[in-house]
Image (cartoon, rainbow, N blue to C red; front, side):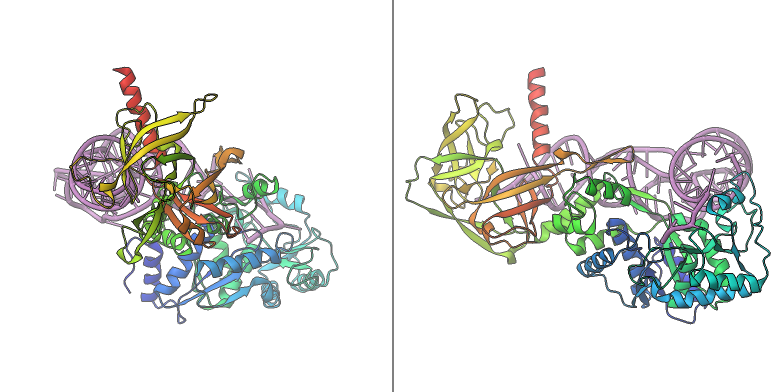
Length: 558
RNA sequence: UGGGCGGUCGCCAAGUGGUAAGGCACCGGGCUUUGGAUCCGGUAUCGAAGGUUCGAAUCCUUCCCGCCCAGCCA
């Protein structure tokens, strides 16, 4: 199993394997704290860890890092488990909770006290801060640093028994108060907390710190490679110190990778919380969010999200990926699988003057030109149709290939039609209706006389059309690191679609040609379809319109 | 500011002394009953300055920029 040369983590693991550093199989883990909903960043860490385990035929664990009762809730565990199942990322090892290991962790801290590597400190939080010094000032040893082992042990047990109040005492590692690495200036190992733990209830009065729990839980779980993001680099010396002092054999190794961000995506928990709690967003599953639930609701496929993360890969540098890359990745997958359907977002009526009112012509349309196996469907063409308002212009610019008075265009899957006129609303000047005639020689083939028809537009039969609500989402603004949700970042349109769309079920995806990829919202009910736009097509209306605008400007200029 | 980690095209990213892959984006063109898809072509001297070398993105020096660390958060 050769290491991927682009994956520095694999290269490091390969070295460990060759050196025979571990006598147990490779084991990784993902340790989320259940204090919020998962987002793309979590999926990224998840795929890195599970990917490594898979590659080396090892084990991948999920460990809820629930060592702070003040911020954790069962609700978040449940949501995480739900997301995990949906993502389909297999936990080949075990699912554990750090808090279930509190007894074992307590034994370890006792051992550390016994061996003189940890002590009970009576400094209050603000005093501790002062004694720790800062970047320019070395810290000073706590006055309690040289307490006798017996006294430390007694105090530790009384802390556990609940004899002291939060902040009154803490357990600290005895390392180096002058270290330039602040994490080594006698860091807190255990602290007193009075909150009820969502899982342990009031059983514990003292709780291990992140560093303590992380290192020893990894070791206890048999983890070999503890992969985490780069902000923990400066914690690595502490991670190693703890495992060494507690005399763990073949201690796990921490390797850090750069964080992944998406340009334009609000991922930070505090921002998300504010947006959700302020009511600007519908909730944690708002389709504008890059939370797992939001992406799911929007219509992203689970495999697509995980595959994207895997493709992005790891690096030591923090990255901010252009959303366009994600979108293009999503399009690529959708293009191969999403059936094509016709719909109009802003309907305007088109009457075929030479098609009698009671008559219907069956047109045949492929379900997916990329995939012949997807088959075809028949759609009834009637005298009265709806077409996209933007597909018609009374006075079109030169390169407008859609419908205009006297011009011809193809109705997708059906005939070539020629516009014979239109009616406008006298009050607003808006186009109220369009008239046209169809060319009966052009069903399923080009005009026999050889004339070229360049434009193809969508249509739906007025008689058979199904109504749907279409939601278009814009990205949330994230200016200056301060997330502001724009009320305009969502637009809701009453649209019409061809009848086959009525058969779609929640979660189903579809491509409305030229409009984008859409998914049926989970809340959608038959007969009242709600569709979310997943992504636009690469070169859709906005680009088209920009081009036309540019051409009009050119005309005006010359 | 002390320490740590990073800096190759707008965004990702190959490359580890031999004369700058690829993807996304963008621009131009071909094909097309989606102006989609697809196909062809175009776009960087490697944070900066010095130095070592026949030769450097790759080695050395100094400098600049970004991120992380002074929670009894994770």
